[in-house]
Image (cartoon, rainbow, N blue to C red; front, side):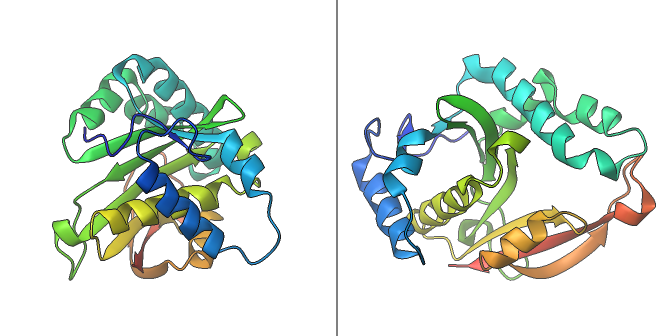
Amino acid sequence: MEILHSPIYSLDGVYSTNNDFILSFLIYFKAKQNSIFDLFTLFHSMQIKPYLEENIDDLVAIARKSYLEHYTYLWDDEGAKYVALNFNAARLSEEIAQPNSSFYLLYFQEKLVGFLKLNIDSGLKNYSALDALELERIYFVKDATGKGLGKIIIDFVIVLANKRDKKIVWLKAMNSSRSVDFYKKHHFIVVDEMDLNFEHMKDEFRKILTMSREI
């Protein structure tokens, strides 16, 4: 697993050991505001912490909780098999061990509310691995939605990608998910689609979109 920049990103900069990165992020985020926004309160309340080995139980718990709160509708078994296979300590530890992956735990008001997974060098059609960064997962628990946290994470990823001289950030999203509209709002466009072949997935929900944003 690659750990990027500082041990803790606290979005008011208080706990950061990489103030240049935080300053770039704050300048970028402020420049994108279209209305009055209590930046200090939000930045002070949210932390993005790179995963540490001792966090595995927290990661498993938040992965399961956040997935089941949003995606049970996709499955005829309410996602039981998918979650059991993909969100257990052994499977997540394998993903974390990949040198190209970066996991982060997301906190709001000192409470763990989600996690983020990035694949740092991950190519897409017409873009080499060195030019592209994949945003593989952003999961939040339901209680944390609607607070502007998703926008912060997108902006965080874009600044991070810029720091790595990336040309594009890309992701995959279920066609039926409300997240598609969220990503479109943040300048991602649909570049491909395919049907998934997972056991227990309902036929009407098998389509997944590939979306990208040039930077």
